Image (cartoon, rainbow, N blue to C red; front, side):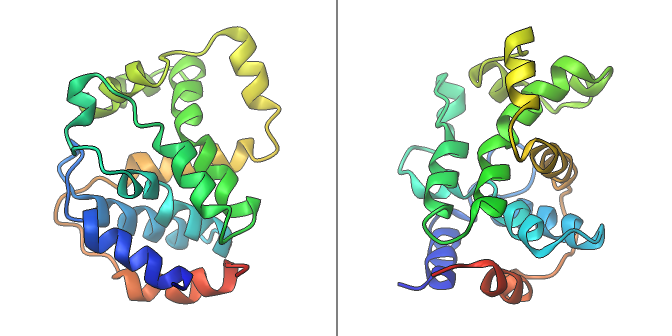
Length: 180
């Protein structure tokens, strides 16, 4: 199965599921990808933003798994899958987007207060605020800045009813970044 077909299959399987944010997985992905494109990001960041939550669509756990107190570690699952199809410029910001939330909640005044209930719930499951050592380790990640920027688009892409381009619009970006 080629990359685009696999991505479409993942969104077909679980894209209509919610994750507590008022939009479904597909709408969230499209909004995040659009935010990156709107801001003039390189294709790799557009693809990473579009596919940052693909890990949620690769497992077979129920959509309310966070309510059961379980962290799916979707960032690792998604990054590992993406690394089979794309270079680190796509997979690494995806791997780091959860750590970026933890980092921003720790380091940026007022960030935590802007998080939705669902984001606060997942933050707790994902390790909560960072220790000083975790902050330093995160800041030394090669794709630290891209992970932070992806997180910003992730936070923005949760608007019910926001009309953005469909998945087909992003196919040229995906094709241009894939390595298979």
